[in-house]
Image (cartoon, rainbow, N blue to C red; front, side, top):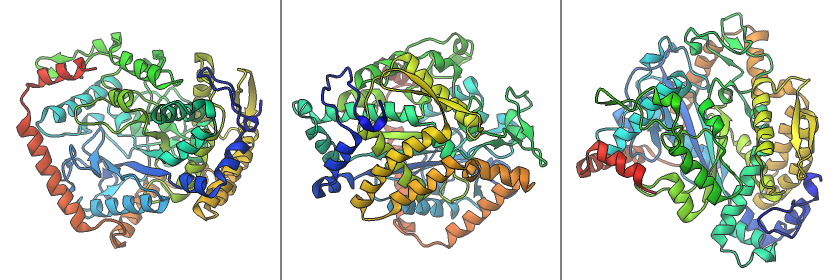
Length: 546
């Protein structure tokens, strides 16, 4: 069955078969177009603070940036020096980019001449032990966040935790889901929230099926600084550039490989993406599943916490996945609790490298494509996964991150009947782009633009010519032009800092950030003052809650 021929029958009781064209026809009506134009987007951008000479900054989180615990737009990830910028939900790509640029402008003005490293893989790090863990103050929740990071360090090492990425948050409007539900009368008796969660999980499955496209089109980490290995012998057949950097000839995203955001311990987990209930059960069970390997670390050693627990997952955030279902959490609530109580509110795309060719690490053109891609995933079959078919998708992802531009690469496409065919990136990619072009035209009409059709043309060109991909561009700079990738990155970083400081605020203001920083410090102090439990009691309560 071809993708455009319709919905596969699922185990969820859906009996009406709708084609991609049926969905497009339904949304071509004016009222439905308005619902489609209500897409919500948010960006989470990670960036290492580095000194002008390229070394990792050892300075703690700057007070002027606010409290990393409570600030809404500026926080830290694993390390004190790995900043994370968060934009709120906005409804145009232009607004999301402008918000991110404003956050970066304020940051640059308050980090004493430091730069933001424009790559996913880190700069030169002479000693991983010198990577400072993020600190969040003396409150129980703040201590928990730091102990969690101590656990990550003990489990996976510090180098894995200073890799930067982009998380893209995406949601459709309620009106969009109402149109979709009305297309299938047998679902009209279903609560809208339940229908929305069900269909978001359909998107998750389709995304996992096709997400090899993301590192192929946008992977920007085919190389790394030799210091990343910290003296260990690499398992991968790296080549060395004239400047000493290590690279794989056809790699797209080493960040997404076993060197980066993966965990061998998690390979035993069978997290189900077929429905909300099974997914939440799977995640919660994983938190309680003991790990022999991590037990060897110890939890509280000589009175000092080395990790939150000795389970495969300390907390749910440790689950490494290229996409996650999300619900805004309340104070003290676990992500899985929020999902079980209120369903899926949005999805988080996590497979994006930092784009070194733009100051924000993600371009507006990328957002246009992601709009198309996710909408396409909403309009096609929602076949449930078995373990074998899910493994096909994971294998495809692993192949593309290490050798996505290899002309000999063949990927496994498992269709609705479970039949597997082997396809090249060009063959499968063009099939997908033929279908996504229809979605792009619809989005152009909804947003009164040509940006989406332009996106299809631009990204399809990469499918047919791998030299146009960012990973190929980076290797061209390194290998063909003989440039040092570190020097190139520093030049980009310095240019972005200069341009950012020269740019006027577009959405926020300096006063907004100054006030926000002051209020975040006050909020942190209030949290600390109101703690009534010991840290041991706090952790026990947290893990005993359902």
